[in-house]
Picture (spheres, rainbow, N blue to C red):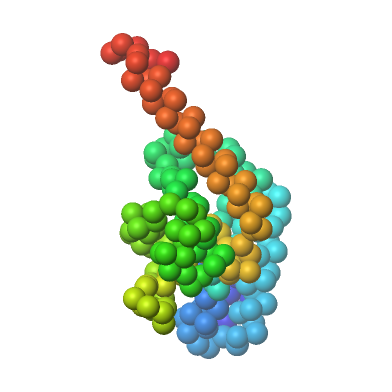
Length: 202
C-alpha cells in the first residue's frame, strides 16, 4: 500500500471510530503496513488538519486518536449545539465531586465529604451512571469503604489525553464558577418563561 492510499484510509478509520482509536488497534487493522509508516502518516494527518482551512482536527485523547472541533470555534458551536439538543449539564455538586475524585483518586466517599463538607452519595450515583467514574477496589481501613477513580469516558468527555492534562485547581475552580453562573441563568430563564401567558414568547 502506498502513502497516497494510506493517508485517506487512516483518515476514514479515525473518523469512523466511535471512541479514540489507539495506534495498536490501527496496526491490527492494517497488518501488512509497517508500524512506523502508520505512525508517520498519522502525524501527517494531524499536521494536515491543523491548517486554518479545516474546522476539525485530530487530537490524541485517552491514548487514542479522535477527530475534534477546534477550540477557536467552540463558542459558536456551543450555541449551535444548544439550538439542536438541550445540553446535559453536570450540577455544581457533581462538578465539585468530580474534581475531588480527579485530583485525589482513588478516593472514598467519606474522604470526598470531608473535603467538600456535604453529602456526596447521590452525586456519586449520578457520576457512575454517566460513566465518568468507576470503582477502584476498597480501602484497607475500618469498614473497607469503596474507592473511586475517573474513567476513560471522563477523559473523552473533557477532551484530555491523560490525567496529566488536567487543568490546575484554580482553572477547575473557574470552571465550577462558570457552571454555577450558567445554571443560575438557566433557572432565571425557566422562571421567566413559566410566567409568560400561554401563546406568548419572550
